[in-house]
View 1 (cartoon, rainbow, N blue to C red):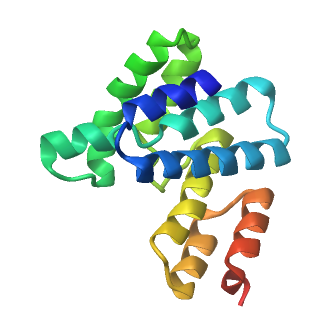
View 2 (cartoon, rainbow, N blue to C red):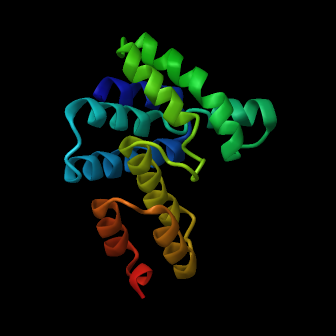
Length: 163
């Protein structure tokens, strides 16, 4: 995982904000996955996806002059695939990670615990980075969070979600 983290730091060279973001999402995803008792394979997929989840931002900005989630979902999977293949990631892991990268801004019909946790981890960080109002925090908590561990962490960070 350290090789992947470093590769993403190289990929995001000159953009400490995105590196800081991916590190936080990675750690929350890792933590929630462990707390939820994921098997080793699913945990590896989850952690890999958390590291590269926003890899589509750079090409989306270049191509569309926008980092909108829909553009990230289009541009991210090919970039993630190249990076993971260059690092020798297993093909089945790479496939699932690319699928997750291509869906991580889609919040309907979440399929799989890895997808659920990735979305929760991203929201834990985005709520902070975007300085979301308590009403937004509560809405996200009610509509997005499903895992026991994600809910617990969210309520610790944003106590207003329980009001």
